[in-house]
Image (cartoon, rainbow, N blue to C red; front, side, top):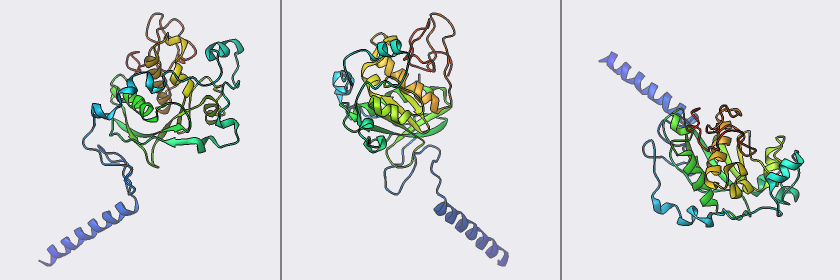
Length: 276
């Protein structure tokens, strides 16, 4: 009886130690759920995936009202300007970055959470948009989700998955910004008002590109947006730039297709190109 009592006391002590450790050092990510926070912005997710109800997505997000007609800057084709000058750094738009304000101070978090997109190592991301852009923030958020939850995206390979959060703890941020603010956030990378980038924990999407696409996609705006998100998030996953390997084949998503696709065919999906 004495031995059994000592064993029970030892078990209680062990439980107490683990409880104390859990309080002192909370685990930020648990398999199958999103990050947790006392503020409630990180919420427990049921199951491994969670499909949004159709009613959650405004119908205008699928049409022209999502900002697809939005043009930043003066008239003229940035692709032509870029090709003719052959240099970066020419401002196409006088935006917040030129007004003495910190670009970070102009960013607004877009509310929204979604549980992990599939199996594999989960990366949490937060969506932000520059204040004052004439693009619906919610529609941009849905657009990003549509890409990253698609099985043709990186999540389809089963190695990495994504979870959307809107609190202070995340692995990376996806930011929609005006051309000049994009330039400021991307430095020392040179985007010249016409490109997007990944810099540290930031994926910065040039708002002009999101609204207008690139010549290489021949007017396929949705296809270009798929490419833009997949390409820059590919850098988050450690992917480097690739080139066109075979004429007439889909371009690797890590090719710089905004500039050109060479002899390849424009492609927005990592798994279509056969190089997940």
